[in-house]
Image (cartoon, rainbow, N blue to C red; front, side):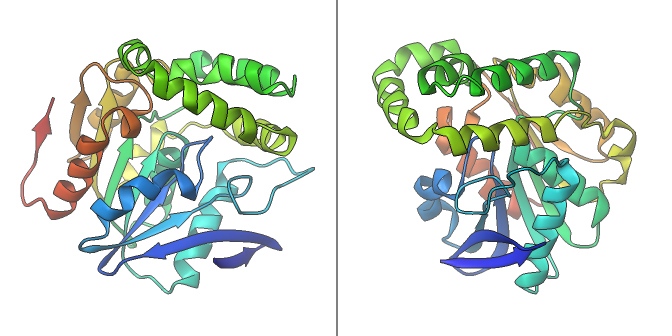
Amino acid sequence: MSEFHYNNKKIYFEVHGEGQPLIILNGIMMSHFSWKIFLPHLTKDKQVILLDFIDQGFSDKAEGLSYKHELQVEVLKGLVDHLNLSNINLVGVSYGAQIALQFAMRFQEIVEHLMVFNVNSYTSPWLHDIGRAWVDAARTYNPSTYYNVTIPYIYSPKFYNENYQWMSKRRQLLNTVFDKPFLDAMIRLIESSEGYDIREQLNDITAKTLIVASDHDYITPLAETEYLHHHIKESDFVMLKECGHASMYERPNEFVALINGFMQKESRISIV
């Protein structure tokens, strides 16, 4: 168990393997544990670092504290400083990708490869109102209600229907996770994204950037992910067909292959 402290908050992280440092940043409902199944495939030639943001996983909760993304950007910088890293590669999914984008803008000299999955450049009215529905569901403190309002829409209908037995087992697991502390943390995490807007700063990203979208992503629609590609210089773009927002679970093999391939790439790629 590894940890450091930021503003008197314990921040949990794990380091696996050796090689180029690759930091993976969680989606909003995820934790370091979400990535365990991917570690054997990512640590063959890389040092994979898992991080729980404030209000996630084993890191401290922020009871009574209202914050924005800047806090999580600072937490990530605290990790980089704690490990004395001068050059890193970042993978982020959804919420974690939003933090990764902002980190890459602010600390250009540190980030070599930036790989963001299922992310947008601002909290649109569409996403804001989805977030408010999630907050309302969280405030019921009913795990089943929260599951029904959030989880089905993270996946593509095709995947959800064809893997319903797996989803049912996931429902049982998550119903034990969605307790009051978790849901209170989710409310703070969701509210931290309100007002997120980096559209005017995308040109500040200088890292080699891979942007991955899904055509059945209803949380961050394809057009919003394409916007990132059009406004980040020399970025590569990949669109996964018949895939939803949780692309790492729907397409785990492609997820790993894209990360491994992009970190070794010599020329631009385009995959659909």
